[in-house]
Image 1 (cartoon, rainbow, N blue to C red):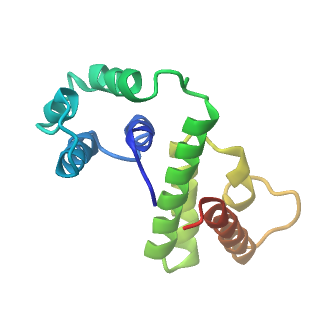
Image 2 (image 1 turned 45 degrees about the vertical axis):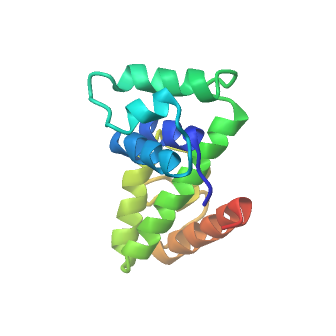
Length: 150
């Protein structure tokens, strides 16, 4: 899946990634020829104290025209959500474990409305089994996958 500074920004801000991914990406950029002073500084790492300042600089340097709710950044969040949920699906082989991990993710990521239909503790419009929830989750991932053409 393609990524850039917007992906890194949204990922760190939304706790999809640790701050260390900033320096990892900077090193990656240097490896393909980016010699800017900012990227060089980031390659040495980002301290917890400087994280807020660095995040603001990333936004200012690479996408100053976008606000937090811009379509582009919302799509980056959605892409990261897809990657995380796909990883959960791969890791969890048992339905109960899968549904519990989905519920944790749901709670930790601001309760996305489009996930309600497969979260085990959310009321459903019709009587629903665990298998129904798992199937809805699978359908959701297929739709998201086609959206991002993975």
